[in-house]
Length: 425
Image 1 (cartoon, helix red, strand yellow):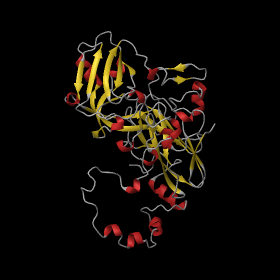
Image 2 (cartoon, helix red, strand yellow):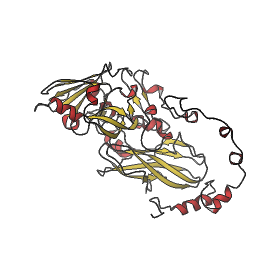
Image 3 (cartoon, one colour):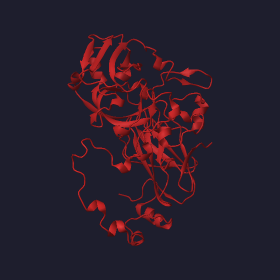
Image 4 (cartoon, one colour):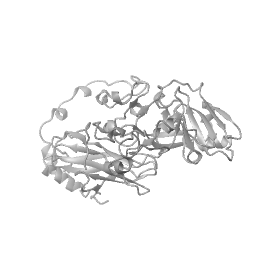
């Protein structure tokens, strides 16, 4: 395989550049090996952890992260919502790699608090314009043909505070209302076909079992396409905050439609026009008119490292710039990275080919000389859609909305390695 990657820096050239830049990059070259010859007690002396027994396998019945990773947690922004019962927390995307979000640090949002609903008490009703109204138990759902799919869930308000200017400092807070998990369950199509849809049925209305119910209308075409009634995530049961024991997955569409604690699906001939799709989750334009039914989450990306919560600490030399990209219209086809505020772009390397409605990880191998950077990423999806700048979005949408902001994000990386959320024009 050619040693020269998409970034234009071959492996050997990358190592030579690290030595030339004075970085302490230890690798398989004579120069790097010579640099590592100084005695290091962590190598030359037997350390405490190698002098006795470690913990037994039964010390922690459910495995938890090691204490050194205690800072990799969800975080809140107190002023965003009035009360923790109706609040938001953010995935620590700056501290993760790969694409799958662990359930324990995956973004959550509730409208009336996370409820405890057991499997024996669970019921799912399908009614309305169907041939046979049905009620399923949890055990019933487990007996239907099962599928496993990987999807991202993004809140429509993700990056919403940035419409009017750079406010929240850190990728966790600007872009952390998102997670990407492997869901297992039954296709919604399977259950609807079990009930039989009458010809006049064109929509469904879905509700949750919590006090808010968070009812949303979904076109029947989408419901029969790729929606999933899920009861597992990342191989285990859903967490309480993610809708245990059963939730709805609506791939590529705004997260409020992914109804948790799913209890009822009504087939209707028109949208219900509920509170959550009229007074809420509509996009107010500059002229005061609000768009509704803007379900799809358009292509978006963000550099997660380096970023304000993940500064450069190793000095100059080789630097792995990495981040996430996703699209609700298909797969990520390409991500470009700029270190000069969008004046020039270079193609990043995708960790794996993009998947429909799933997060893609990208890497950009860069040699940093210590000068400041205006760091950006720009996603292109399989439809050809290119992630816009803030200026381009504002020209069409204004700044009145808090929803569907998929603009290019800029981090100002300073010579000391620290980063700050800024805008460029």
